[in-house]
Image (cartoon, rainbow, N blue to C red):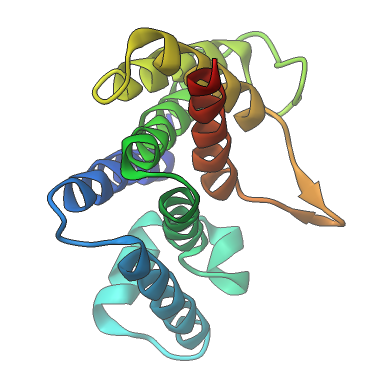
Length: 194
């Protein structure tokens, strides 16, 4: 297993839990998430031109090489944007489990798929069915912290199906860190309508 990818996905998992804990205890709100994303974009831009001591260390240890030149910190910034949008559009009892679905499901699906994947996914040839199944189970467990089982099940299933699809806006791929919390939130909201 790629050591960089293990570190990235571990950070991905812990970052989501950290955001949810801060939201749960009222230590941050949706606007702090937005401001953090904006500051991240500025730091990303600066990082392509100058070496910022602590930021450089994080980028060297956690960033994929293809993102280092174009958009350093892309994953963390898109994560903050996804968490912000979930908190903007949904009440916290929907936003927080949506963020956990991202934290648990996306990280586990990637790691499990890389390590144990044998069957290519029908919706995306770059991903594995085994990873999607493991991600669904992990997302379901994460969502159960806040949701009844039927909401957790439906939201996790829908989110992990969408995670496996490569979504594009024109020629630009939409980062799943932005999409997953929104899709999970919509799924929870839909279940609550019935």
